[in-house]
Amino acid sequence: MTVFILVAGAFTGAHVWRETAARLTAEGRDVHAVALTGLDASRPAAPSVRVDLETHIEDVLAAIDAVDPGREIVLVGHDYGIHPALGAADRRARRVARLVYLDSAMPRDGVPALAAVPDQTLRGELAERIRRDGHDGELAPPERDAWARWGSTAGVSGAALDRLTALAAPQPLGTLCTPLRLSGAVADVPVTGVLCTGNGASVELVQRLVDFGDPALAALTAPGTGFFELPTGHWPMLSRPADLADVLLRAAAGEGHRLRPAGTDATPAHLRPFPLDVPVPAREREGHVDLYVPDTEGPLPAVIVVHGGPVPAGARPTPREWPTLVGYACLAAAEGVVGATLDHRLHDVADYGRAAEDVAAAVELVRADPRVDADRIALWFLSGGGLLAADWLAEPPAWLRCLAASYPILAPLPNWGLADSRFHPARAVADADAGELPFVLLRAGLESPEIAATVEAFVTAAEDCGARLELIDLPQGHHGFETLDPPEETRPALLRGMRSVIGHLKG
Image: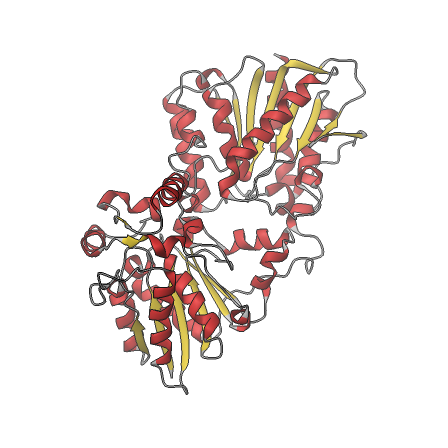
């Protein structure tokens, strides 16, 4: 018989599992929700004890060791709870039949839980506090309206949120700054990932990351690894307890979506052909920028194509060589202007600052080329690169004649920790200066709900402030429609979008 050992996240205790545990028990399973020292009211810390990650690993080890050796253990870690769960599973790899990552990060050896704090502003503040005051002390739990800094509260009722807040406990700083130490034994434990789509995660997104070929993600395609999605926010044990129990039962049975290993598909989506057959001028490489210059007397306007992400640092070829980006640049060249692609360092959601620096440097490099009219520039953003449009909307220079975007993310996703950052186009578009800048938006009708919500927020803000927004809809278009959808459906939108952008450049 399966025994479920449940480890809760930051500020919370065994109480959060009440409804899910009851469902599992009703199905005949034994359930043990771990009371973490200093976080759970039933296990207070002694005044002289310094609570850190090792303390919580020991709590989980005690729960594992209390199970009869002949029984199968499914160990579930939510949020911060995956760190002590993973540490314990590494030391009891033969006892744990399956490790479930419940809407959590993928901790690595030597990295503290602080690195997984989703709100980047808060993470920086905590890092500074730890540098200044050391590892002792506590982090106060969130107020009722501040839980969203730790994950989406979508689906959590008002009563459940009240209870979560009332029972929350301060998080000992030592649990966040103690590095996780792994021997590697846990690599043999089968894994299930449960992704909460309302918090910005999805199986499709993880598959895209795997397709980039990052070796660090290869383990996600192992035969024993499965994935499930739950259409809710970061606390499914509060918002969808019955559905979570069902998913955990299926995980224990070895079910779940299997990811396709990189290279097993004949051609991954990001390397499939561009749908328009356009001439490809000779590529000219300068630094992190590739130029495609038409055989036309200049100086000429330029369209600079900005890729999305995050893209693993080891992805090859790099984005500026992907058929879609090259296709946009060559389409621009075919229409009589300079096309440019670039690589930027958006390898993680924490990298938007340096990615913005790379884009700004690329723009200046393109503008400095004598064949380019430095006063007539357009920027075209794709996917996660859409957040980088915020800077240009907030303070558009006179030489920037147009912005464009295809299936962009236009507000930070809930689990990206960027809600208070400057990378928020849906806010930036409401700025008075941004209202004068044309924005051509190619909108995918079959976009994921989480990304579609950011686009709608942007469109609403743009319409409210009278921004010069042109919408080009692809009702049957998916995210990445250039290489996923039938060419006959995407070609008209691509041509219309590019010609509109060039019209703004030449007008």
